[in-house]
Amino acid sequence: MFIVCPHLEAVHLDRSDDDWSVNTERHWRARGFRPVGRELVVDNWVADQAPPRARLIGSTIHIDAGLDGQWFSLADLDTVRACRSQGGLLLGISTTCEPTSVTGPNDILRYGIAGHIFLGWVPLS
Image (cartoon, rainbow, N blue to C red; front, side, top):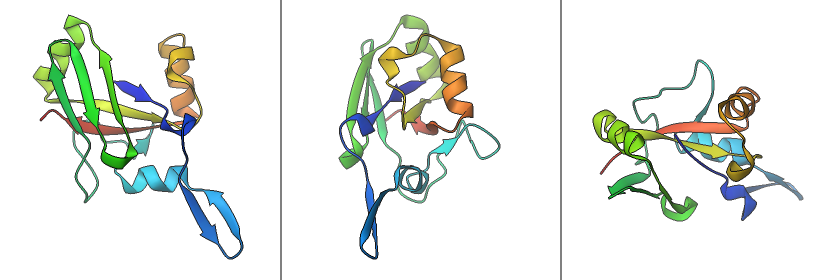
């Protein structure tokens, strides 16, 4: 799983009448991402529009989500092998937590169950 928090830099807004509201959940749902639970599909892209693209270059994972962001991270050998054997990876879009402040799998699970991480399958290209 690759987790990013693009909302530390920008948020998506909707205008209704004379008010603005953050539409983070609606935006990522439209892009094919789902919260942890029954809606989540972990090995298939679920949106009509094209998924982000993931590439492995050596031990670095590169993800290109178009205007939504571009990210990269080093990965250990086991992670690289798993991505290659599965043909992709889960991309987690965090709406509140800073990924570098997460201390381990329990934090990820806690944020995920609370609906603060939306996940989507990203195939390797």
